[in-house]
Image (cartoon, rainbow, N blue to C red; front, side, top):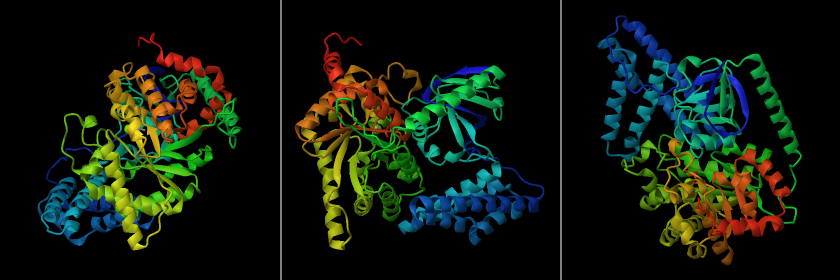
Length: 559
Ligand code: PEP
Ligand code: MG
């Protein structure tokens, strides 16, 4: 039995085989083959497998976001067996005796160059498609499972770290838990694990060895313990814990349908954070009152090219319709920093977290913003929509974003396309500048949603991705909590409501504080809704308010 210690970032126990996430190898071996016909057959087999994979993705996309989303993968299927493309590969294998991986790589480069040199923007964009299709065939040839889990049973997934673009492609039904070498509690892998309600442990370094793959592993996300090949008493102990976990969950089930009201009658809305239309069933089954944060950038991360207006419209419409009139707040594109997307072709930056990200990209590239805002307003006809803008620092940014909304509404009016005139507009409070300017910003919007992951990062000058900064990255720091109180006070003076959608919202140690400073909404992972409701219903704000606020503002704070 081997015990390993990491940092638990999503609670719960999971038991299952360990599986290492594999990436496509970036170096392709190049050699001459002896049996050219066998090599050609190897290519044909990989090509068929890639076409099958694309068919599965097309169906998944159709279910999640409609026919237009599926079309992308169907076009890729056709590309994979395009006659000219196939003939070029055949020539490289049968004519020049190249191995299949190298033949596909060369052909992809040749076709991508040809597309890129065309005048028509549509054909230029096909360069990325041909590379993508070819990468898929190469990953089948090399046996690297790109973004997939090639296991018949659910697994505990181990990785060095996972980029958001990788996590988004994982088959969630096959994951019992995550273990990563690096990462931090507010990294997107951790956030995803909490959204999915599965245990996760980060920061295990090199203690988890490749040779453990396939062996039974127990992970406990509440304390960061990992056990490989547990002995019988240890296994029994964890099985018991798993059982208790189920019982606790059953107790929480009894809270479904009840209000989020404190003992002394103060109400707070409890909403959910999601990253995809797929997460809506979890919101409903956990009795979330609405969606307080839909991270729309995951739609972009899921695509190989800029998602069209129709593709986005279908996804937003699905979430709004599935939520049946409950409020849905969709955040506009928030990429940059750890969420990089190749087709945006953003220049490399020295300090990406302080760089071209989120609303800054949208304001600098209005055509991308315009497409998203149109899709959002069109979808607004199907439910109760709120739109919020991330990474705001100045009033002028909000005015410019609002102008885009006005422009889109005018266009839709002219085109006779219906939209709701009841869309709430809000901003995220993620920078100290926005918190300090919240008195002024409150006049511009209907609501604030505090992104405490970034607000902590920027207030404490502490990279949220850096696992080594653990104890310095302290979202309980009074500097962060005082800013939250200030934001609340400023907002309420102008009738603007305030939510928290960062991970801190689900922190039960702070629920009383949030109620005391008057937060109106907490948006948390679906699995956190009922534990939070339990905590709210046990709280008497009158008992703790004065003391907690005095503590928060006290001269004695010395952290
Ligand atoms: C945040 O910063 O708190 C937030 C909710 O946004 P994200 O975690 O997606 O950056
Ligand atoms: Mg953020």
